[in-house]
Image (cartoon, rainbow, N blue to C red; front, top):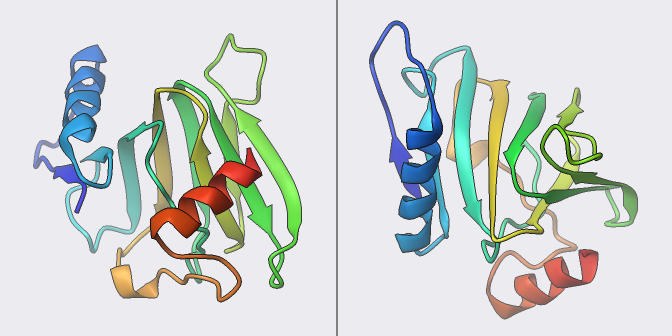
Amino acid sequence: MAAVFRHQEMVLGVGKDWIDRLKASARLEPLRRARLNLHHGDNDAVHEMLIALCGDTLVPPHRHPGKSESFHVIEGEILVVVFDDGGSIVRRFHLGPIGSGRDFIYRQATPVWHAVVPLSEFVVVHETTKGPFVKAECELPPWAPHGGEELRLFLDRLK
């Protein structure tokens, strides 16, 4: 399980100190990622998270039924690959922070199969999606590996 930080403040500011803390935590986690939940609980209607991903983290292709999702890249570069139901690539988004010359926001208005592949040592994103969070509702496609070395090779080929 990745490191998840939660808070209960009614007003919260997030600065570089949080980014540094998340990156340091991600380095120590088996899944190589850490997040700060900006929302208060899993049942909140809107979920906002600051997420740090190490460059070697593995996120299998997946989708979230009934949910939209967006990423705003704060640091690093990331590849988001969108697939059709058969596993063919529909679109690729190479994202970076403002000033990188790349798109810095990705949004999907409908639940599509997608893979998230870090392209730099660290990637820090602000993610927004619809709540509530129910882990069992995340779907994994039958056409892609879900873990291990097979997943690493699959994601490397996407680069």
